[in-house]
Length: 210
Image 1 (spheres, rainbow, N blue to C red):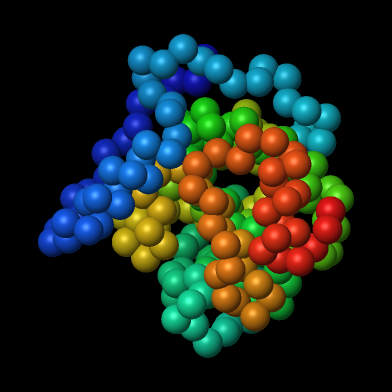
Image 2 (cartoon, helix red, strand yellow):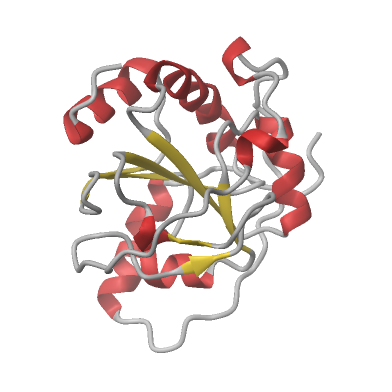
C-alpha cells in the first residue's frame, strides 16, 4: 500500500476569480480519484513496456532557450525530479511533445503510465514525452516513478502552485499536446484509459501515427 495517498495541501491562491473556481470544480471531477480512504486499485504488475526503466531514462534534457509564445507552454522553469538541469516548459520545442501532469498519490496517473511507456517505445524520436510531477514531495515523486513505471523525465513542483497558476492544471492527470513549433494544440483533462485513445490523440494533435 502506498503510504502517501493523502493529497497534500498547497498554499492558497489569493484573488482567485469566480470563473477560475468554476473551472476548478469541473476539472476536479475529471481528475485523479486517489485518496487516503480509497481502496488501492493500481496494477501490482506493470505491463512489460513499463518495466525496467532506470533513472538514466528519466534524466531531464538540456534544452535550448526559446522565445515564449502566447499559445504555447508557459515561461515556467522547474527543477528536474531526477537528475539533469532545470527545465523551462516554454523550451520544449523542436519535436512534437506529449506533456503529462501527474502526482505521486494519483491512482489514475498510475494506470496511465504503461500506456505512455508503450507509446514511447513505438514513437522513438518522432515524439518527446515529458512530465510535470506536482502536489507531493520530491521523495514521494521519486518513489512513485519506480512504483508507477513512469517512463519519461519529469520536472518537479512540490506544492503545485506554479503549475496550477501558469499551466491551469488543477487536478491530475492532465496531458498536453505540443507541436514542434511550441504551440499547444490539444489537451486531455483526466485519465487516458486505453492505448487506442492515446495513439488517437497523438495522431490527431501531433500528426504522428504510432
